Length: 213
Image (cartoon, rainbow, N blue to C red; front, side, top):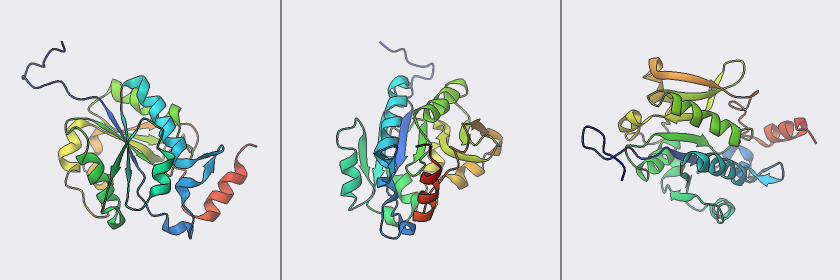
């Protein structure tokens, strides 16, 4: 039987991994960037598999937020051990997706937040944030490029959850994190993995052209 902490509360739930995948890909001019192939696998499925692999080693379940009418994205996840969370107001902005995702998670859990459109984030990068969280569970952790630029993933500790619960509309977690600079720690990730964000067909074409064959 798991012992209770001194204050009598039940033990904190395990870390939760939350993938935000409800964006509309407006700048892709008709294409869906989360269906773009990365190493032969659609981006959303590739990232979800990476998160599952890293989460399994840490006992961290994976959840994916989708918006309305995103059946193709949902199909990519059908055989994976992830929970799909529907965000009916996702078209109003990232804050709505994040709010819907957080509302479905245990309220006292830390959350590792992944944006679904970062094609260089994989199992190794997700695991690096998990390891850093174990070493310093009260810190806000943010992945960074090797030259020190902050990016993603972002790990939101449990104490930050009440502030995050108020997010709505197009307000993401950035403003909440910015209120606590003294608690923020960057986690260096390989190369530009933390900051490679592809939003247009031209971005994707240029990035794919640079990939090793």
